[in-house]
Amino acid sequence: MKVERPTYAPHHMMIISFMAITSPVAVLSYIYTLASGRASPKHVLVLFMLRMSLTAAVALVCSTRFVVNGAKATAGMLFRAVAPFAVHGLLYAEAAFLCAHTLGLQRQFGDWAVAQLDIAMFRCDPVGGCTASLRSMLPWRAFGEYMYFCYFSYYFLLPLLWLRALTVYRQCPESFERVCFISFACVLSPFIIYYLLPVRGPESVYGIPAAEEGSWFFGHLCNSLVSGNGSAGTATPSSHSIMALGVWACAYTIDRHTFAAYAAVCPGLLLATVWCGYHYVVDVIASAVLCAGVLWVAPRMYDSLCRCRLD
Image (cartoon, rainbow, N blue to C red; front, side):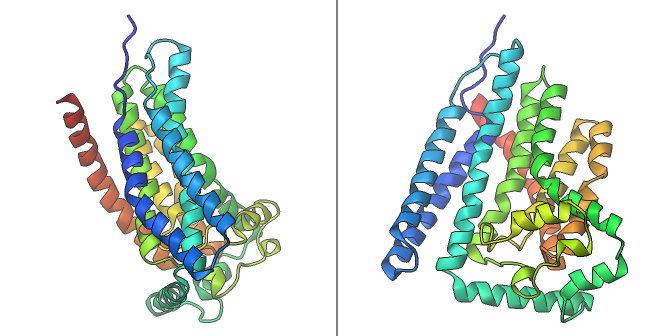
């Protein structure tokens, strides 16, 4: 017998609520940049229309009903769970927009403060930062290639986790939704801080190390992805680090094989954020603290939403 799932899963409710809460902040920033002449009306209009259309699309996809029997239903569950992740790219673009056009002085202060804190806490090289110190300790090119590969793995760790969770929990959609909820909470949580205190990262102070110095392939790929201002203002805390920790913790709840597989990459990703020159050490520490809080709050929030949905 085919059984219909409820209209909204808890992680859908969280994403739609997050977009609704941040919309006034985004709209006010758009109005400010237009009034001050700091950005072109075309740029602002594109971001505004993208935010509104993505929010509506996510709400539409999340409200689609499906059945839990059959291959098509399994594909539908995966699409319905993953589709809201499209807002992630928009949030990065908005954070960069805010950093570049509305919070310039605060951005400069944030980078200076974090860089000085890095040097004071870890006695890093004042010229090249902790990246230079770490590279002098671990100078091997093969190790560098592994570091850049770990950093690049950020782009597929989460989709692979969802696919694995769906495979394991095919007959238990509630457990699959729980993994989605906790992982999405890890993804969204840093953006609250980005809006308050945007930090560009070490490249604004020290520059990004040349890929040729420590890589054959993945260094060039990673440098090309992070170059420019597409993710400016999203350094502290590191979204790469919090996702690595959150995904690894979720993998532990699925099974030992998944946890062991992610252990080959997730710890390396934490080190790679500094070794590759994309983040301060403080960024990684802030990510660990934030992730610990999210992993404590998110499961309880999920259970609370489930109880409300049943009532």
